[in-house]
Length: 156
Image (cartoon, rainbow, N blue to C red; front, top):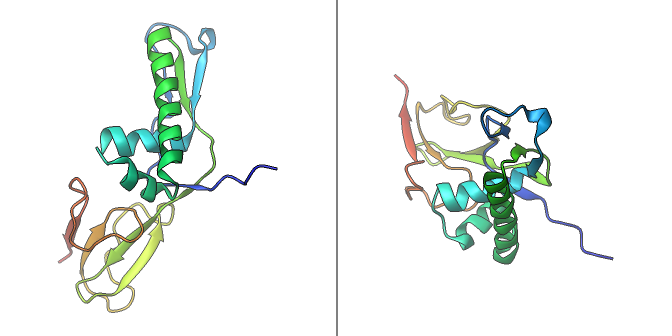
């Protein structure tokens, strides 16, 4: 009996879930399905430029598993681009990553991506108005930059 698959952590859901060549109705096309975690692997490695080890940590999977997910996604996308197929992004075995926050007094808390789309305005402990936002990941280092994702928000 095979081991149960680990749930992959995803920090972003794409707004557009379908892509297709122009000028051909979708009903006449073959379609390639890319899972949400495959899209996340492409985002982390190819768009964000992360090393595989760091991207695997963000997704809560091993580096070899990340490599397999990434290769699968790249194969499907190449197949669609070269043979004129539509790409549908859906499904998979994933959970949304938590967004971590820390106020200037050192209080920390987490919110899931689905709880709120905006950065919280106040620290739930001390009501401080200035809150540094850290990109979705576990064990991040405060003050470390992740491709411009760390932002300090000051509300006056």
